[in-house]
Length: 454
Image (tube, rainbow, N blue to C red; front, side, top):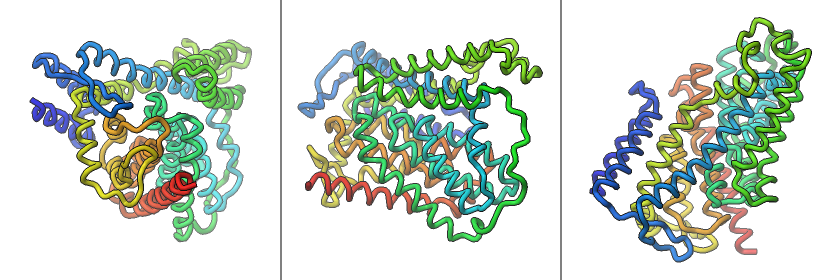
């Protein structure tokens, strides 16, 4: 029966990976896989287990208890993401991201590359790498008219956005998963992964600047002649970003789950949004053509735009991986990996976990989705909170996806917005992303070894 379970999981995984070829949204195989796996466990009365991380062993449990346990953990992530997505949509409702374009004052390509890379790195750490990529590619389309040059910039934005999301507990879905699951704490994650992430962003930029395409100045005028949709755009941008950054501090102070702080932040942002939308110079008065602005509150409008397909996909894939974890498969697989992979002379603070395993996880995230990979690793490794293993997994899974255009959410959305060809990215950008990934990995291992040996 375990063989059938694995076959169903692999088949579902392949359907998710081949989403674009099959023309089927990845949420469909994810939800089907989740339901079928748990149904088989229930109908065949398979034994389920809970991993005791202290004793590093499996303890028998009951199906209802395990299902409720994993649903609770998954719901924490989904509610957190719903809050963050809604805040971002509220900012966009007031056209707050247009404020960022005001920072662009140079026409020199090399300076623009640094500016967009740094903006992607910083923004992705706050509003996640997917949203940061959407915002910056939109601005890019207004600033650079040459499409070939835009493709290069978009590729570098993908690398920088993924690097920026890796060191922040709110910068990427995978780091958020590790943070909510109490595998890492916010300050320790930043302390250990920030410098490797900076290296991962800087190294590709330094090599890219050697290309002729980044020499000289761009053509056209940088003057923004568009009328702002709302006079409160800048205020809502800073309020929204500040409210999201507030969440880790709220968790540290109250020790409550992150989604509680995110709901408080959403309530505060939504309050100001309602006040500003009812003001004399609201969006509806500035842009009277917007039927949506006239008939909906900013909160209702923003809630209608959040990506529910992504939320359902996360529900399906996380609960499917939870089924394998409950059967003890991931725990046993981790033991096989640890016994067969070379150790490269390194170890975690408590037990040996090969750096090569974690780096393969990062490379694998370029081929298949990093969410299930990280979810699986959480069930495989029984090392304690803030162990270097979790920090390295956060870095590898977050940055490894940059090596292929389909390897990260940031890459997929940029691919759609700019119609980037898979093989163009593979030939032009992939090796830069690989250099950044390897440089950051080496930096992480060096810093970790210095700390462990201190």
